[in-house]
Length: 451
Ligand SMILES: [Fe+2]
Image 1 (cartoon, rainbow, N blue to C red):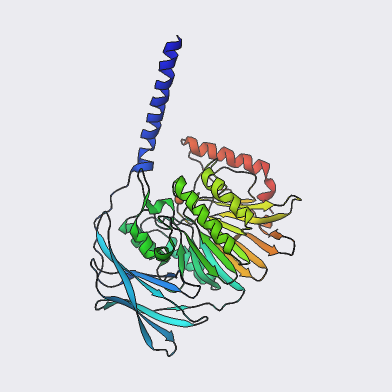
Image 2: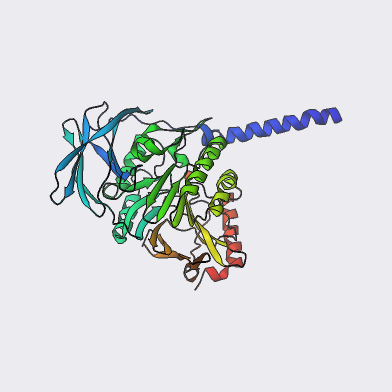
């Protein structure tokens, strides 16, 4: 009998693992085909972003044709500066469905509080003229944050993003928490640029890596075109880690690539620790795709184990995250119960919502909409406001105030009711379970639903 058990148990385990892998094969390893495409000859998909030299540096990337031609960026300081030609770095990238040439112009030593016009030139073709303004260095600035966008072809994110930017003219740049593009295919890149077009030429657009930006496989692979578009990574990445740090006003914004395997995450930890040790900024903001405190159960434990300690040790104020396709905000508490930093925010702006779990350590959830945040830094106060995109109503609000003792979080979101609208498909087991979790949550926290 014992001999039989010794054979049966391992066999059952092996079969169970094999079935599990077979069920997850497509999710883990399958990349759907990229349709053939032909790159336009005229410079297009023009994107303004930050450089890696100083807070007065900017990069502009664009795409044009399928082979390299002499290319430059024409830059004019308005109203009456001379036109300066800045040589562009070019690189041809072959994807699975086609080929395109990408260019990056590095703009350095720009003047603060200055107005510039520029256009991208490749061979005898030029983009239209665009304009941008550099910020005035003081202790007051705002930016707009969006979590995963991952729009479908012909989706509506472009409408929401443009409306958000138009309503928040105070924002000086846009940050995306990864998975801006649904998949690494030209058709989805076209959709991404349709979404961010007209915003990303006038305001620096900062994006981080999400899992959807990678090609799946035994070893994940980030396509070179991601780096060529979000071109600060060309200069900032360390080995194969897409990390970056932006110093802006009184803040340091640290960018991690949380999608990677364990050895890469450990290398990023060393990079982050060194950068944080050097940082003298009043405000520290961390950007990574995977939430350190997951709303999907016990996910992301490596990310929390590796980065979570540094976040607290170095007094990170705000952690901006995505990936889990709902809104969730958690505030740390001091030993005496005072709400304090770090504040952890999970947000998304995509057409799909996940069936999350309602961990009571979170202060607030949103499951019925898409969201974006405005973050304002003004002297000793950081204000984060969360809006839902459909009618741009305020959904959550807090302030982090730096006192001589510690940072204190003022929670105004408690006065804004949560929406927990969900219509389960009665034939869908996961929907039914999620609906039960929602009802449990409503029973535990009736005060969060009505004000
Ligand atoms: Fe994701």
